[in-house]
Length: 221
Image: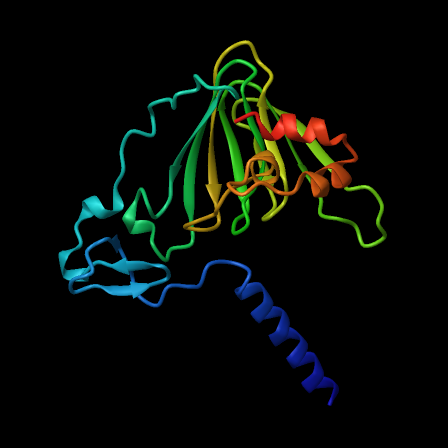
């Protein structure tokens, strides 16, 4: 009985880990296509006929070119996910280039479906993430690090994190993500800039701010 219980426990843990990431593919590849003719709908996208697949379906150029950081935050993200590189469909991984103007910021955000491995290619970048709510209702813990060229940092799946260029020169990094479609939830936009705005009463109580302050933040679009 004890052996059976141990086996069931291990099996349960195995299945819980398996379903924490993208489903494992059941074929060599499933190149995404928008053409519904002679295609199979798998994992949210149509699969191209394998006989029509070419090397170009697994290729993308241009990641050497910086993104446009001429914006309020001074940052740009160039994703390489299944939408940009069809051959990634069902393979459970993706990539992104992050460019920073001097003191540019990638605002606090989460990836609901992916862990991010962040590698600095040029510059000095201050990064951090915050833990989820502790069971004992104590404060969320912040982990931070100042990274330089060649340094690597991991942001666990689903946790709020940020990246800030603390140097006087442009910087850029590459991120690998454990999903073909990691998703991005920018905290400020989700809370204060949703298409149908969250009630001022809700936000003023949640953040303990005057209603007029909430209204002013919501008007900054």
